Length: 278
Ligand code: HPA
Image (cartoon, rainbow, N blue to C red; front, top):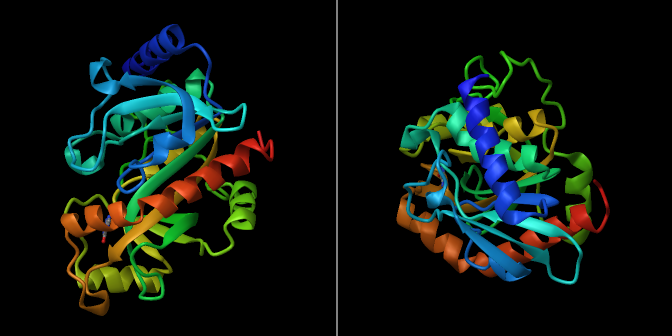
């Protein structure tokens, strides 16, 4: 069997053995989202992911290494929240970037909600805005469906129309009509974009730019899950309004907006579990 598959299956086996009930929704928190997220859950059970063989661990400040499993308050829904993700710029392969998501979906999670921090490509979306994805433009992030990266399969020619589930997004927008959805452009980083790249991304029709999420979304959909993603726009991208992005600004904006982020996260979870989209 392809080696990647063996690693994913070994993780599924551990999750099954140690944690019984499969979550209805897997959330990958990313920068900006984790501060208050686990407060949405009760009866929690916390797994330190650094202790799991083959679970790639984040090396970046702002990303944790825990999987919190619990019930969404006042709901029968079971949720798994990963407090961090790994990035291509940390040197991980496409298969490693998505291994955790693949394991959780193979374990049985039917819905995957991917959260991140991103730069805004317009002053009309100021720092602190939250943007559900309508679509993405993959500029330079690795693809987990490539031969050698795809668990158990060869190269997979999957259609990505409606990758970010329109029904789930519509339910979220009913609950949070102030949110303005948009297109996310993904670059490998870790340096921020040049102002010329930012002007290009605006011309291409992107609304936000970041360094993650796209590989996980593709892998989750390929594994059969319903996918949604939301960015917290933590800064104006390079050159917009004279901006020079820096990591501290990203972390500070994330902290300052963690209360509203938790509210939107809760609305996104209730949108999929209360509406019984699954
Ligand atoms: N560019 C890319 N990634 C980011 C940014 C940005 O401006 N802000 C947060 N993540």
